Length: 452
Image (cartoon, rainbow, N blue to C red; front, side):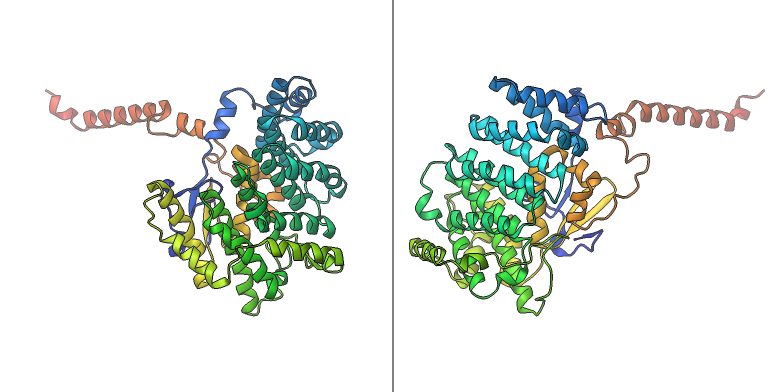
């Protein structure tokens, strides 16, 4: 990950039509319109999160579901656009109790919203929160495995993995979540039968990639590499585009890691400053009971893919012209899988460039791209604010301190439109003054023609 990196042929700008949900295109100018809407609604008019945070917390403690949703929306807006670490820390006991209660007992909309707000609170508190993870993970895991709706399960699974990514470095915690994700992906063809299970598979693939981006690279060598791609590979043939994309991007990262090992980069650490330096399944290998369970799991896998079959599958998806699929779906699929094929087939690194105000950011590894996708999903409309002001977010990608802003950069998009655009009142007034000056100079120059 670097700033203002050289843009190769794969870093060129792309049409907005090529964007897909949860995937960052090659170059993006991050929009500030979401920030404007909140300011225009009068929700966020101060740098002090206290009043807004207190209002949201009071509402989620009421009994009515309508109050819970209103409170969750206020908390989401506040956490997205302000620095709330102190507010979250001060109210952590009642805050997380209420959020977990909504995740577990709320209807689908409330439960998924609560999972997303919980992830934002975890990000606000930052790392080294082992006790917090021990408190929230049992509830999130239970909902992820036994929730009544696929959407509820998927949101809880994402929140569980994101909390593991941010809050804890405890090996047993990471191994447990990683193994849970492994199991969901491996048994996709046998245990996921409900309508809407594609949401769970997409979440599992995204979450697997996020957590895998932090572990020691040497894990993805030899038999572990083969097992991983054999379990993710069949999802490339899934009927849902989002599942194919999530599986393809995670596979690209696994191939990228394996290729770096084959080229002798065995000492290379995972992306970011924080990583899990252990073999995820080493603890499980010591247990005979776990070995039996794993043997049963492998016996259930009727559809596994070799490395050659995975490469063939992604190449097919990158050039597919299946008329049974819509034109837009085919276009998005080809756009996404071109970069995946470049890594899996040719060993080329991806390159994604974001422009946020006066800062150009280049992401040149799949690990960083998957982390970027996950953080962007959590932050939503607050993505730009946190990328410029949240030290933890910047440290994950090695960005250092945010660049100093000049006067124009401190203006919001609404203010730029009011004061700097060609149709603004200020520009029109300036244009009038300039035309007036030109007329006066012209008249003064030709004044002798009117003299007697």
